[in-house]
Image (cartoon, rainbow, N blue to C red; front, side):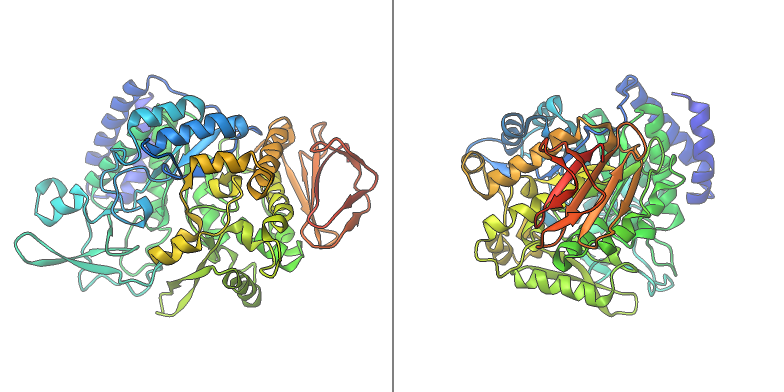
Length: 562
């Protein structure tokens, strides 16, 4: 580790965060970096390429009676998924009290109901791992918070009680619950604390340098435990400043830059992924200058825009937005996805879709029995925050008589777009396995997002993957696309991209344009057959030659020599 170089990088960032305590903070961070540098022993992670693909999953997404879920997951990945994906994003696997894992009690422990660190290590023997770092908040049962309530001096300043002079009138939030909740101390008195996401998720106060040091130790500990990617959950809300939106503040960006600088020194190549479900221009700010902040940024506009294309049968809006998406740098790229453990966020479509377009998506989801989650604007009004739905089911008309058959075509076509776009793709486990809505789970729990979080039985899943039907058709189609993708350098995150929709029903993506590796992908987002004049070549997915290209309803092709 080059301590002097790291010190130069940290100096202006810590001056911004802690003007009167910068020397203390810098010395502590440098000492921490040296400690972890010795433990990591020069660890280096290669840059992503066309083979890189993530699977997003809970640690208990798949269960077998009497067995640790992490162990079950590892077996299903080895026996069924194999090398279709290279990386596994483990959603929070730590002890928790609510929000399906995102109210973390102990960041440094594995939830014993899921397994052990040894189970995690066994997963890491077959796939690279992404750990979820819930840095913005902790469970109200966390020792950090209970210690703070009890007056333990170790936790002085760990949480924020905004006083009467703290102006919260401009705060932007993704929830409608109170911003401040009150808690009883052991002596019977009450104290308020900042709670962006609700009563059981209490925001930490990174304005206290000790908190930054503790969080940094957690992050570097994840790398030592095998993480090659760290997802920074809800990171945009990290810093609070009176009179501001408390979202995307310069201090938040400075914290991420500090973590990037530390990782570049002690574990080069380990990737930071920022999770900021906000309008596109705000989201991309987390790349920094392309070399000093996030290695990957969620492509949050992609899911709603792909859904809009299939609902409307028109790809023009998606194409217009995608024309502005290109390479970032040698060490930064896009993290593309269609479905996740959360819903389909609509805030990223601000300035892209109009109110009528968003209303159409809301109607589609509600017609499928899905839900809509709301957020509160600074003026107190409410707006649609996300659509709670199975992404696959939302692609098809709710009136379809045989939805299990009808979903296969548009489901694979939509993922053809995902796998063609510049960046690295991530597929949610329910998409990979062709799952449908879990209405029972949603209604029983009262949690909208549970519609897309069903726990699968291993024996049933394995049987269905080997039996003709929805699961098998989608699983085989997606794994075939992934296999073909990794064989073609055109799909490298560093390869260029050109997008157009000359026929508004067909999205055309040209990857590595003008090179010997060029691949042209075309997807028909409509329920009509389409001829595409001017596109010809061999479809690397099927081996079929097209001259010109003809696409059936929801058809897609990846053309070489087009």
